[in-house]
Amino acid sequence: MKDLLPAEVYKRKDKIVFAVPNNKFNSSKVREYFYELLNNTEDGSIQFINKQMFMDEYFSKSNDTIMDWKFWMTISTILWLNKFHLNEK
Image (cartoon, rainbow, N blue to C red; front, side, top):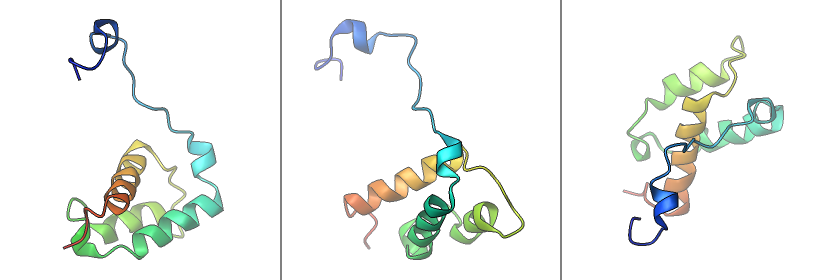
């Protein structure tokens, strides 16, 4: 990006990642959407995770785990792959 961005942008040392509003992502509607997204994604198309272990960790009835940055990064990657049809065999 060096050729496209001004030096004051690409040389910045105070860059941070996007904040994830966990309390909003933990709503039942959002959890249901993400569950369906994962459930309807073929195991072979997301080889970078063990889908069943991931779903068990975040969606088990006895687990109220907040959807943390690992969850958000995984879901974002799956959505990106789906958007650009990069998960098709």
